[in-house]
Image (cartoon, rainbow, N blue to C red; front, top):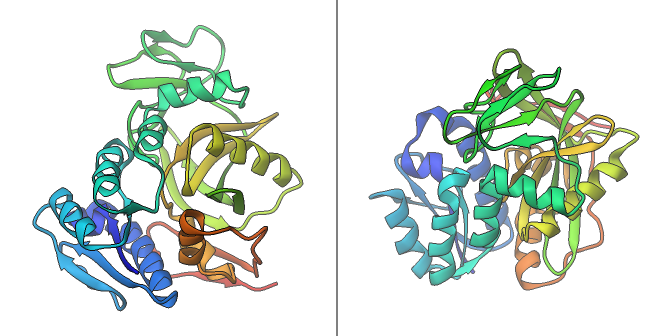
Length: 306
């Protein structure tokens, strides 16, 4: 098949997120090519070893044009614009990612949290407007629409600005679960997120995979979360493991964890993404070793073999 893989930082030339975006794009393009597909990707200047770079004349317009030329497409972009971009793909090609309505629900952190709460998924107490800090504890202040750790900070009390929400701060390890959803669900790995918490939150990288005695419980909550929100293809569920596995964010798209997953999983990630749409997913995948990477130095990897 001819497949479009469109990553926003590379396609739009966003330097702030270029290193991480390029690493994710390179991982996916190499995997699709290894599976025998022809891959096109929008680029504002970056050229990868595999696939065909198509010079962008505007990211959205390039996605619209190329999606009409390809058999299938996968878009990675900030959650607040991913819904519209996914809808373009859905009109022109076969979408290999989450449906646009699922993307929009996941992107709205307030509605997403409310939906999960009503389905008995553990989530932190969340305030959508007005004052916060009535009880003795910290809150995490974050944009209602946004991705990663950008614009997130910790506060004891205050009044929310428009476009922000407050969630109760949960003490515990910051983890993520990577999984693929099609007719069935396939958990890939539980990952440890390297988060620096001061006044602000800063994502530094990941350890893939990460094993703890509560992995089964963590995976179960993540799998239910993805089903409730209508996720398909690859998705990442961020969890803080306290007295319960609290879901703190849902990423309806490939995440940086695929950089590590591709190094330790025997199966091609692209093959699983394709099978989630067109075929049957396996019952499990084989993971060998572990892989640690940092956001700032993605070219310097540390690998340990079992």
